[in-house]
Length: 185
Image 1: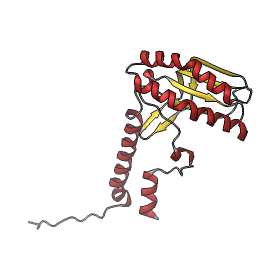
Image 2: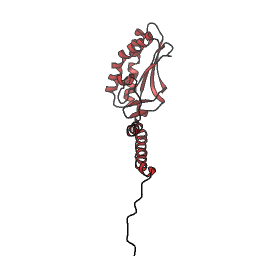
Image 3: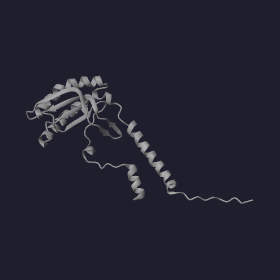
Image 4: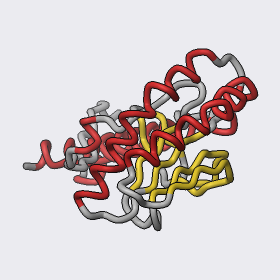
């Protein structure tokens, strides 16, 4: 009778890489899960505010920013006093004339219009939450022709203003790619 002996097989390169590939696929699945399920869900309850400058010139942008700084406390106060979207809508309707008056006094003679309508908003990321590009119920304050960069904000249930961090250009990286470069680099 022959004696038993251990058969030793050498692992191929593919067999060595399988656990790493499985790990990378798992990370991609987790990222997809976070991207899909960690989006903002209160968008249908939002009333947004959009402030359109006359142009992109520095003077027109300064006028827009000045108006923003003057009306921001009014909007925050309306939000803080509101418990529902209807209450917020009523509070903002009461502020319309005051907002128009402030904007007209600071607009250097440019025409001002304020209307509540369905307006297109670009996508916005706030932490892990993503607001998709879509049309939302919004107040649109237009200075002059309204062809300049704009300031916009979701004001229900909380108000969001441009973050200093968002103004800085962030280098976009993908942690899976950085991890792979770290292993082989």
